[in-house]
Image 1 (cartoon, helix red, strand yellow):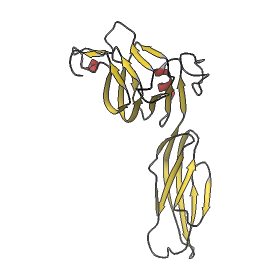
Image 2: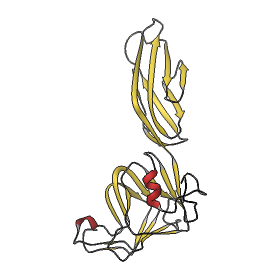
Image 3: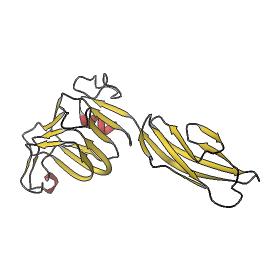
Image 4: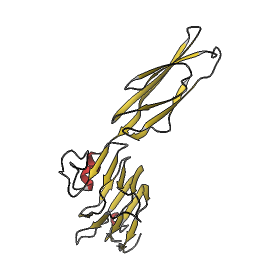
Length: 219
């Protein structure tokens, strides 16, 4: 037997779906015992199940037994990683970052504490000046409240006279979503400064408007 899920990375509160599978003889009447790492589920006809998690990493196991007393267990260690919701607002208290009232005032600060699978929410109708690139190098999402540049008023801009891009994205499951990105500057004299608005090494940039950025060469 075995188990799979398409959502090994999710945010807290999401339904994670698991699909068990069984092959072999003596598999007419089967009993299933799921251990999700934060609770269990027992019964028949439980090849397809769901579970809800809090933030953290969880091992998942499935034990299948039949009417002849035969059983088999498969375990996936640290199989599911669940992130949290973190918040950024210029009007936040800059404390826990886990709600709007206690939001970070700096995007990078929230990105740094966000665990894999997390979403960093950035407030609309605010402008965030950066003096160093916002570096997103782990499997998280950084999103404006609207997640749509056509509706978004969340602006992220270079607020320094130095040559500096605005975002650096380097993880295959990193996402930056729904921003107006402006005034970035990439200088071809240094390859690390290519890409005026964003240097996208790996990951996804979507629903963003890049405007009035510049680079001498290389994007």
